[in-house]
Image (cartoon, rainbow, N blue to C red):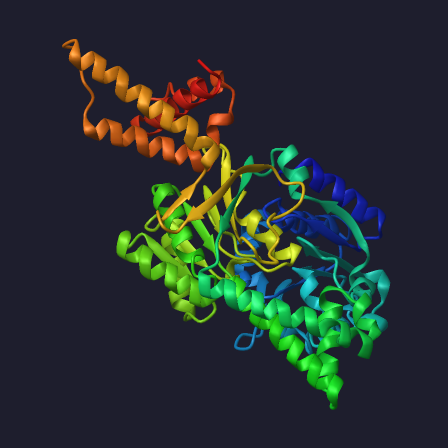
Length: 514
């Protein structure tokens, strides 16, 4: 089993922590391979023991991925791997993969049974931040009664830090290792990437409603704080939990809290469902067509709107993947994208966690929650290493004039600052366009002079190809690369790629005053 340096280092730390702990590693950096190596390590530590491995996953589709990974990397026979879900219950195998909804009230008795039979147990919790909930925490009911000499644990997550994790950390151990997207990029474990921001405007009606709601929120908040001073010092989930408790009571303060919460949700809806997000996303796809693209949205409604437009433009090349689809339809969509039958995949939150998505060149985040966890996971879906792809491009849409964060994440490589122009139906880059227009004018002038002198002219198709590639450069920012690197990339035999890099060379020279 070939491991990255960080994985080897992490396993050493895990061993020193008594084979317990939570690992915070960014999506796409190899958490599953780390867990497989941990299984192998425990087997070697207990060569004469009948070690049992129990893996808790948040969603049923992850069982298939774990079975495949265990068979391929540990050379395990399929009969040694069990699944524990609502319909299938196979808890007596060497490896058992539990879906958390089914594990909550059953896995504890299985762990206790194995330990009483002197079988060591390694518990692995995939996406362990899900274990925080009042229901899922029952998966750890065994812990006070387990012989700790025969119990080992490993928690995996992209961002495990959360609220009320005392019982989770008691059962799995503290966070022992952290490995960020930034570190993975430095170590060349994920692809080089750049995040471009795309400013999207409200419609006039949205602007009016947003400002009206904002006014109501601001006029109400001081009275709400007077009635409940604790709210003023609560943030994130704590704020909304406290607000929910107030709203569920009775009296004037409860009514005010209920009204305030409704206004917050309505404001969030206006931002998430801003009308120009959809045509902006479609224009980005149109410009990038031919590359492998994943589009992320917050609402199924948005996914369906984008699908309706793109499916007319590119029949059979677009697939959807969201929670309201039947299991067979979701599987078909993912297989079409994996096999290359489709090169555009539209997703709601169903792709945010765990699912291994094949090579992708472009990510378009149409809308996102304020949660750092989701943003990291979406970025990780795009950044899985592919030596055949250079810099990967991620486009983050945010609504101008709203409370939405104009930055996807702090500390990530940033690219172009773009904006969507509804009247033109285009994503624009004004700084770039000034130079690009100059290139087009100079190019057309040179060939006009040649034609007047009886030389070779240029066709409309060639000018259109140059214009298309120059517009693509406005969105990707490749013109900022060193000129020598651009010219080297233009030496390819692939005509489409060659044309693009020639266009970037022309723009780069114009910017350099050459």
